[in-house]
Amino acid sequence: MFLELLRRGYSVQIGKIGELEIDFVASNPKEKIYIQVSQSIMDEKTLNRELRALQSIPDNYEKIIISMDKNYALSIEGIKIKNATEWLLEV
Image (cartoon, rainbow, N blue to C red; front, side, top):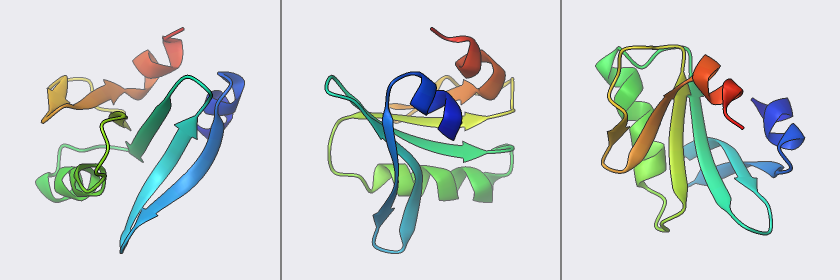
């Protein structure tokens, strides 16, 4: 994901809010995106952990969880859920 974000023209950092960590904070002059990456979010504990970090961010920039899961909701409370393969194929 890191290399793909660089390829798409973002500068990439790791974010931290208190004890919570954001996997990638990707930004360019036009936008900022917060991204959490997890192999699977089918386990409720894993999903809640990934959501909690993104929900704690006080601004309204785009927030995404990327996983290998294919059969999942498209968003939860405004946080987008995307399959990794599909995300990689986006332009």
